Length: 256
Image (cartoon, rainbow, N blue to C red; front, side, top):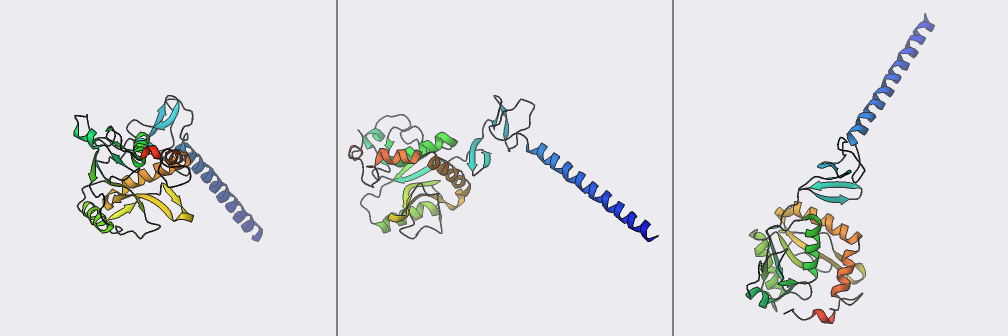
């Protein structure tokens, strides 16, 4: 009797183990099926692409129309770009150079973030490259805050006022919060750094109002991607003497 019970329990356990194994493999098969073809993987029109908002386009799994590709480590995102409607900035060679003659002329779209020929500089090149990657400057205009030769306290007060009134989506100026405490932290989010040098206490970032956290996230991922591709190194070489913070001589003058 004891032997029969023992055999019964052993048989029952074996059945349960077998059922568990089948369930696990079945579940994994379902997961694998749901995962589908990875981003940039080869596909045919009937295939399932793994990532959200992707589809088989031209035999490759990629973002659907209207979505832009973002990446964090090995995770891919296809997101609708969050548009910046206004960018506030301070004229500051060579970060931003304003050509007032151009602005006073009949130039088409003189204040356009994307198309204006009236603004040049390191940060203009940076946001235009970000726009090229994620197309987030549709119908965006630039507002120049006239704070030349003003004290840091006046500059701080003006920037705080803009942020508190939600009148801009981005403060396009190089903030260095590694060297100086962030006086705007109650009203501003700082972006991922686009330039940093721990030895020289340099950690440059842009500023976003608190409501723009999603736009900041998209731009942060794009900035990190541009750093990986060495594009920002190219900008530094273009606007500064290599390895220094000294302006390249030919960039000191506002273009006519």
